[in-house]
Image (cartoon, rainbow, N blue to C red):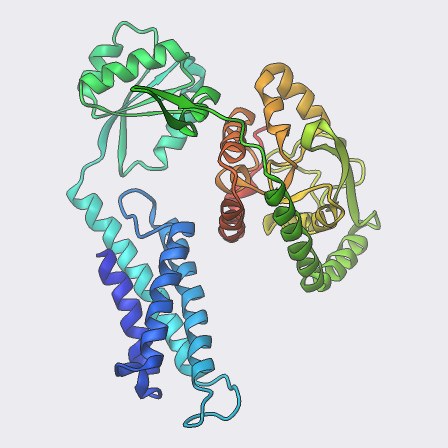
Length: 431
């Protein structure tokens, strides 16, 4: 069905535009160039946004990611067609043509993707029953949390039991289950249960710790005939620092120019709402524990205090709700990036009070300060505002240990998906 989806998109594009461009329907330079462009762009964007992985992801995220890939591909191929139509036989100058046909293609693609995704997930779960799932915790107070996050995928996993890892029934319950989730267990106990699941051929999921990240990002090294895993400190090279800084300057300058109308409109609305200051300023932590003043559009009342946002927080203004929902309050941080205080991609700049609190609870929290704070990043894309500090730390450390310029570019593209799921990503902490 995945091949049907992508081939269908390709056929619709070429067939409809081929009504006015016969060269698309023949073996010509235009058809060959656009075909290769179509394949390359599809492969690149699929690696960034995700593929048609029914049965693994819910329909909505699949539709969003595949549609975004297709729309970018449609626009790039359409522009390429118009460029190649500038020749002696067609147009003497560059023209944008066949806009009506192109809009029809976009609408058909969106409908096609939506139908095939929902049909694919529907058929998958029709022939595959939910897996009997056991959840093992080290603290039963986490039961509600685990039932909620696993319950999001209730068509794939059916929780049959939730028990504590010290229970004498653990082995018996594992034997009766097909899938096992292990959450926040000690390293020793987790390894015992993973070994047990392996012997009994059970699927097992566990949340990683720092040790796991070091293992996952290690390289295999052979010394004579002995295998070692090498965990090396992944510091940026001089060339990487230069390229990353040039990216920061170029993108932030461009972003400030094209979003300048939003700055004006947001400033007027914030000022008209309660007459308070337009910008919110706060000290934040960045690389090596250095501090800087972060800029944001003010979304709260002027006497709100200095604490994290909670669900249905009455400190947020009516204008602030709109700005926060679509992440527009973050736009002034491009000024911080231009000044060199932040980067486009990196760990979230944390409040000084939180750094002190989290470090006292988790000494390894200080490791995330090995890289400059970023406007976006792996934790900001994958996680939510209210993702626990421990889980955000794992995501930040994974980014630091796997850093590359290409990964930064990929994360910038993925940031678009965050804007499309604004309601989830900006959800506040529970009161």
